[in-house]
Length: 198
Image 1: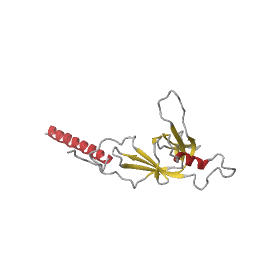
Image 2: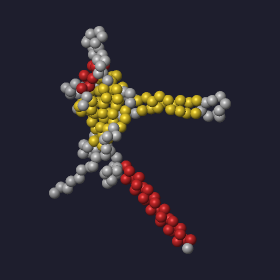
Image 3: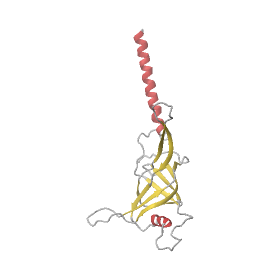
Image 4: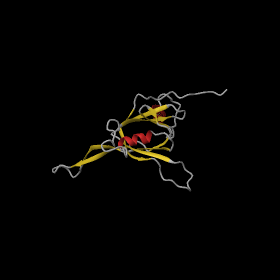
């Protein structure tokens, strides 16, 4: 009799584990419940001034670090208390193949424009921009977007290293300082397409 109860308990426990596991998987993709694969990093777009910037092949990623403040009271235990301090957002680096598109160059020139005359080197009204970084799924649907605020270029490289013995493309690069980012919660998981060939 005891063995039967133990067996029943084991079976019930097994199904609870399976059900819990299934629920946790379903939460990862609430619209496309058939999907198990995470999104890939190779499909994305960058946008500012309402336009998608062509040719961007690398974004270094979004990172923020919150500094730790430690404190100990003179009469307290021999352990330091830890609390959050200032949060620092790391630079965003964009790279693309060198073409005649001037989006990187025009923005960098708003921060410092050589030869424009004393007092006119910086375009103070509009040298900062908000940008949007969109992650796409394999079919090009937007699955997630991040808004990055008050960006400005601290470094611009119209050409990376040139090498006569290299077989690589010429690269243009811009480094952006900014004051924070957040996920755009108006972008929701899209319904993924399905088709049957004939």
